[in-house]
Image (cartoon, rainbow, N blue to C red; front, side, top):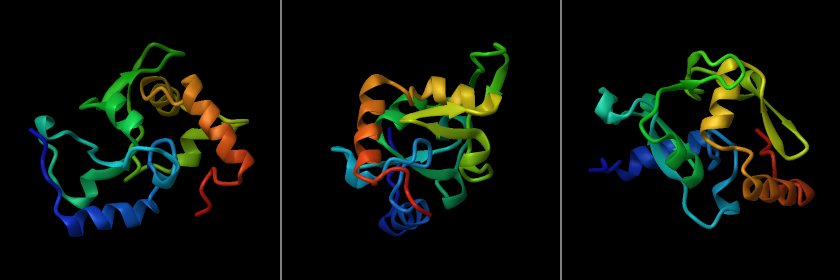
Length: 139
């Protein structure tokens, strides 16, 4: 059963994210589905519905993440936490190369793999947005 996030809290999360998915950085104006509010630590794991535990996520990122907190680093096969935009900086863990998002750290590699950042349709969309100078976001 999903938790409803009140309007004021949702607006706070959206504004803090600049209307961009905090995982893959896609702006919500550049995808057909509205971005969703994601619990970084899912309620089933004790996560609260408070600003510090919420992030803005596009539909593909949010569906791929689910309630996961960790996954395997595809390079080392060790269990690592997923990227947490509340406490980590995107550019410390990821780089944009052409239209692909590359993981720079174990956390980055694991997040890229689990959230399927480089699925062909997502790369094609980013490539088109880069050509139109709409990606990556400027902030």
